Image 1 (cartoon, rainbow, N blue to C red):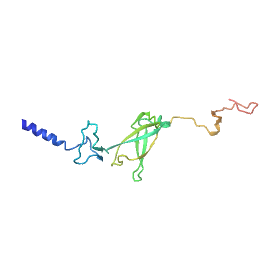
Image 2 (image 1 turned 180 degrees about the horizontal axis):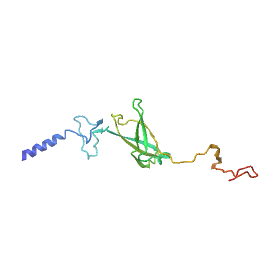
Image 3 (image 1 turned 90 degrees about the vertical axis):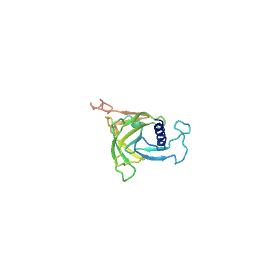
Image 4 (image 1 turned 120 degrees about the vertical axis):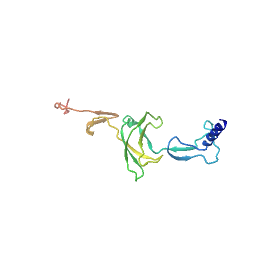
Length: 171
């Protein structure tokens, strides 16, 4: 029994020679070389040994300006275009938003997650995103229906009921 326990302990220690990620992926940064002394994870001097990225699904992060933030919500369709000319644009949809503006940039963080087919995108790729947020119904007025006096803007819709002495139509 003692020999079996010692063998199991030795096997367990030998398994520490290998570092395994909890998912399949690609090592994008290697901060340790064979033979380098590394500190335990709880130490003040500890740092990641590797950065591993899964390319099965991508998360695209977009900063939406404050003026448009109220229009963007989960499920809104988006078109993603990679800056590389060989990769065609593809359709996606907004997966989540932060629901809060960043006070420094006054933008809303929006995320789009999508399966990375073939894998088309690499980690860290810059893309252009066009979000097709539904616009609220609005009135459209011709320019000549808008009057600006000083810093005040007036709009009037007149229904003619005849002319008065001053030549203006009255409602």
